[in-house]
Length: 216
Image (tube, rainbow, N blue to C red; front, side, top):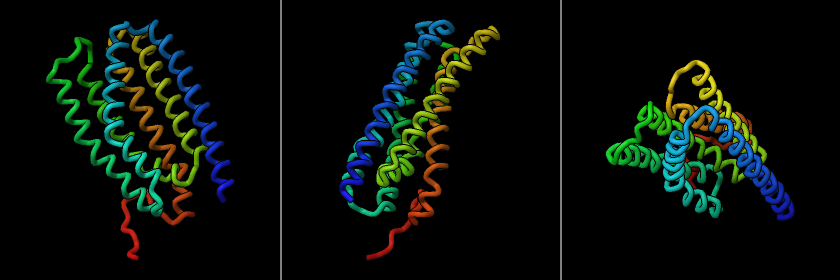
């Protein structure tokens, strides 16, 4: 059993390393394309949006993820606890967004609209935590790689596609391409995780939703 776990962990590490390398290369290529259609100022604001999303996700879920990986409880208990990330993330999203708006907004078109979309996209990404926890507990690294690679591609298509379309149509949509890309990323994560893990829940007799644990 331990040999199988070690083999699965090694295979999972390989998948994740390749995913990170591919994601970085794809992000670099996308940025080079966007430089032809968007100003450096807009790219700078997009970095601030990215920092906003990363900050919420880090404080809401990272410590919880580490704690859950060390738990020897049932998978349903781990999934139930993963909902704490959603409960923590919602006030963080609201609080950081209000703080940013009160401290001053960059003079770029559709900034508030883009921030609203980023807030919604971050919330959707938090909704993937139960499925992510199940994938980690079951060592299903292929599902994680599939979800993250698909989501990354959707973000690239959403960002580049909307920016190129707006440029050719002569429409200034400001920072909206980055928000569209982030929304596509989070939706991609949620859909792929749910689609891939759903058959596993039936076989493993657990649920991605909150479920009362049997009394001992």
